[in-house]
Image (cartoon, rainbow, N blue to C red):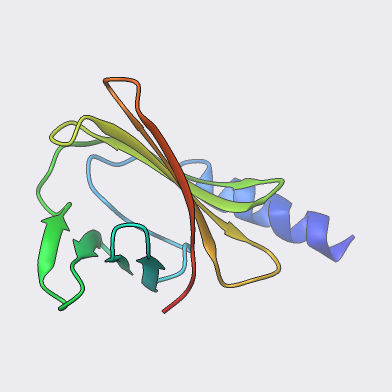
Length: 121
């Protein structure tokens, strides 16, 4: 019962979030590794960056055209989704309830689909 109450509270508190920018709200901040690309996804309170293996910035979403930014509960956990006009991609991240990993899905305007589990760094 507590689990459903928590999900309901999260849903109510995040259902009104819609932004032209990034505001992670209750989404966890930190770094997660995409070993397929030797890249690190860094989530900060008001920004998301992709870092290379040396910690240099590969891509910074700050100042980019972010659309459909949404933070919402799902049956799999807390879901963050948005699209970026400059990259031509739709992004979805799900932080599960039982582990530290993020499930990432990226879809492009050209039809490419990419899914990976990102372990916490």
